[in-house]
Length: 183
Image (cartoon, rainbow, N blue to C red; front, top):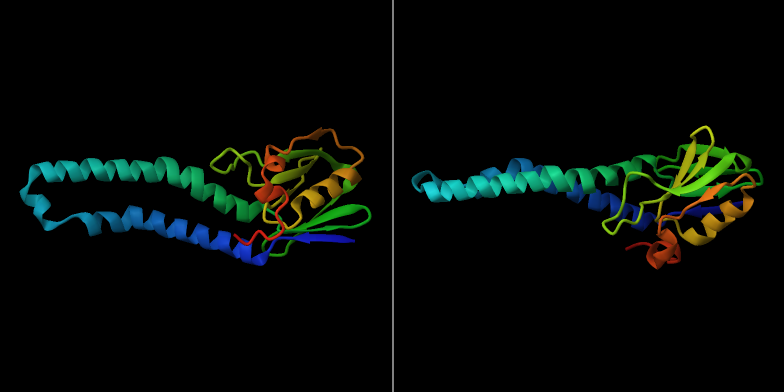
């Protein structure tokens, strides 16, 4: 039995980044208006208009860019990804962040594809999905150590594999070949 798992320090760092992003979002929605509105704005109409335009631009940046393109994919990543993988003789067993197992037989895997919805800023997916014909999947998190070896081991054991698309992950050495993914 082969076992691959994410570096806990790297996974905890990503959780920390997600929490900091959440604090920034809450600060932008709640804290910014109360912190940056000085009392002098009430006496100067131009400053009031400038503040309103700045506030609208900031809030639209928050709601149109930061939340849907950064924070939501990061939360999805932790909710749906598998951080450790065990390869047995007949199946692959993925465990999510809460150690809940998902087991798929190698013969059932028909597709390796990038995660469809969440992408890094340069268009690189967060992880790879090993998908069956009936829609079950194991999503391999990019913090898994020896990622390339793990993916190739699974690929070699899947006899019914039809489509293989790494989505650019194999071109990124920080994800594909780095040993210590703490940072």
